[in-house]
Image 1 (cartoon, one colour):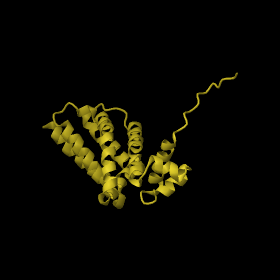
Image 2 (image 1 turned 135 degrees about the horizontal axis):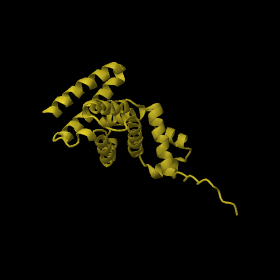
Image 3 (image 1 turned 30 degrees about the horizontal axis):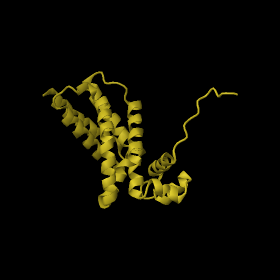
Image 4 (image 1 turned 30 degrees about the vertical axis):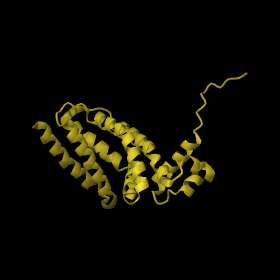
Length: 198
């Protein structure tokens, strides 16, 4: 009896296949085109199988959040390796976060937030998914901003930085001016530095 020298990769479950298809559609086509029918076709599953795992479109879309958060975390880790000098690395860390928030996977997540404004079911599902993913976001931000984590205002500055960068990323969708985004980050870094000095 022959044994394979390479380990067999685990076959993704049907639910994972559906979620993967939804994530891919969100990133490639946007929320409007990520319909249950389109996801069903991309995942190559029956209508019954999709509805068994995700009875509503809101639940299907909410299932993508954890996957998107994981993708965004990996991208941040690849773009920011260490934090050695607080004076320099605060800006490096915020640029890494900002660059990540300008990527399609993060913008897809933000697009979900935007359309949930008039969709109570989606908003409720997203709230629960984001709540579960909050720990991962805090861990990633904490890793990036390790150099000033001991400062008494760390949590306030970290939370404000995330909210600021989200706003900049959202504005950048229309503006499409990276130089403006970088200038805003530089100005925010100056605010951070002054706060750290005091």
